[in-house]
Length: 34
Image 1 (spheres, rainbow, N blue to C red):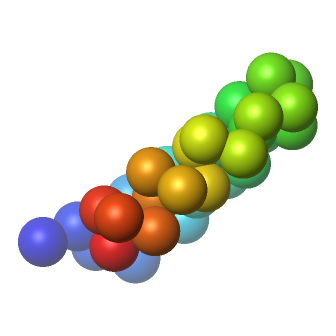
Image 2 (cartoon, one colour):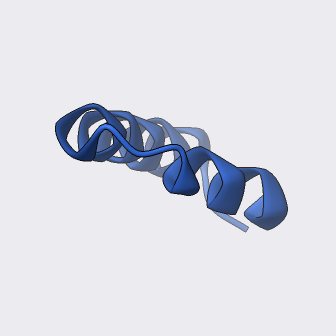
């Protein structure tokens, strides 16, 4: 289980990546993972 800080870090990285690539695939992947 990830702790809160790791999850926040991951979310920030994923959001940054999504914005950079302008791609919805990342959020779809995240929904599956969580």
